[in-house]
Length: 334
Image: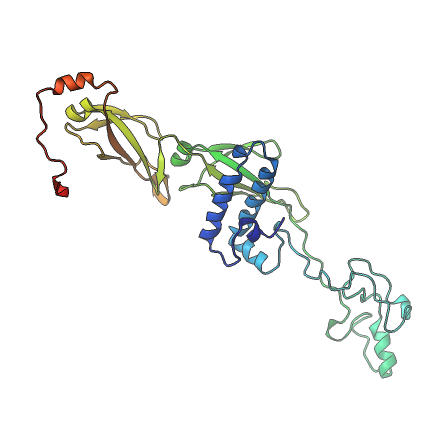
């Protein structure tokens, strides 16, 4: 995969907010549901998601910036390129020293293939300095560890598996559990975190690919769907509710939808259009706040809109001979 910063179109010094904003914009443009006839868009969408997964993880981003992992999150070989291609050293003392030294080591050889088993340095130092060096360290030992191989890298854990979970607006708001089918075909129940939003990630330990160093994880990225009349505003949910002229004038009880189902709303007589009514605890789940064992929730704010009938003829008849003497624009000096 290409450089994740370049994939998201941000600078390496970009803040978390800038990275999230760039991801949301690209994810919206490239989402498969919007590009069903464009397989290239789906591929780019996958690249953008992988880039965001890496850069949104502070630890992985720092390791990538230090050159410890690649754009896929895999560890890089810290000794890559230190042996001129990995072939054994064939210059210097000759092609065939004591005990067949300087043989071809293959790709794993460090420093051009000069391993401790290839060159008996104790014999070399004894020949140079008259045998005065102690052999107590054993064959192959040398000052400052010359010729020693580095310890082998730890076994690599399995790769993570990335999932995208589309969550309905009402489920995300109320925190309803979701079902997701994993790569192995098993379906599990997933509890949404409080305050969930598009881009929220959940880690499923050990649900990734198997590896000699352990199993990878499953990474679930949430995408909250839109709603035809609800809209989120922080921890609150807003909506516009139409009422009739008679309900506004005389008052009454009307049904009002919420993410938990409809409730009855009491309209006071003489209610004006634009009046905002508050339904306590009918908003979004709040991160870090609880009421008992459940997450606390914001409120639902309902703006009342007076809707006139399409046929005004009957209303006009009733208004004949009546004049409204109020001055609603007086406060504007009009």
